Image (cartoon, rainbow, N blue to C red; front, top):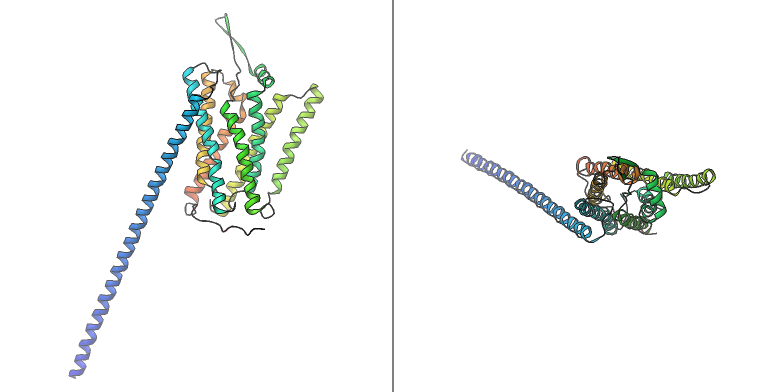
Amino acid sequence: MLRHAGSSSSSGVSMGDITDQNSQHINENEAALSTSLLSMNTNTTTRNKKQRCKILRWSFYLVLGGTLLGLTLPKNPNIPSQTWQLSSNIIGYTYFLAWSLSFYPQIYLNYQRKTTQGLSVDFCCLNVLGYVCYTIYTTNFYFNKNVIDAYKDKMSSLSDNDNTTTQRKGEITVTGNDVAFAIHAIIMATFTLSQVGFYDTFTARPPSKRVFIIFFCAAAFCLLYILGTWIYQGQVNILGFLYVLGSIKICVTIGKYVPQALMNRSRKSTVGWNVWNVILDLTGGILSLIQHVGDCASMNDWSGLVGNPAKLLLSFITITFDCIFLVQHYILYPENKENESYSPLPAN
């Protein structure tokens, strides 16, 4: 009996010890979980702070570079206001830097990952076609005197002012920074496309059939326009041909963004599509629109909006699709960031 009682007492103490140990383990786990959550929150806060600092730093560099270029490079002599001449130049070269720099994050990301998985091959191919058209369009409007005279004859209008003086309108709104961006863009777009062949090969990642259809239609449209104007007018209408190239650039821009947006949607991820490319592209689109509208307002000549439709519509299209990409990256698929990676494809 005594032995049994002693045994019961000993068993009771053991159960209490076990309960205390379990409580201690629970408390330790809760403490560890709290510490882990606190650490995660701290890391997230630190990462967000670094991200904000990075954005502010690069924004400062962008504005500083645009200001220096705007102050030193030639201004648009057609703008009557000296103040807006300078402002337009600064805005224009800031957008030039933003749009030009937007190519490099994607190029570096491809180099870093040693693959272009996540980047639409159709996007790259159509990018080259679009910038070939845009480069021909801007360089002719800026350098070709025959095109400039033809544009003025087409867009100019005489308006009486107090029945004594006339005001000539129809100045070209293509600027030096438009030309600089177009030339730089075609080089970078071609280099990005070459990365697809270098890292993944076009055998593994060929462009879709619709890309070849678009290339064929663009070439056929240009050829038919040249032949048509030659037959009916006896000469090629260069100004009209440039508007054809501008229209192709606008259509291609829409066509190149759609495959990338659909790819992000089907993969439920934006990995491989660098968000800095989108941010810089959006910045350039907004500044380009501001410069274009401001130049027309300063010259009191709104025909420049119609006379340079490529620049106007490209700004609107760029802003629209970049907003879609930002929504995909930060709202729809926020759990899939650039810290995820694809394993490089085996080399052939």
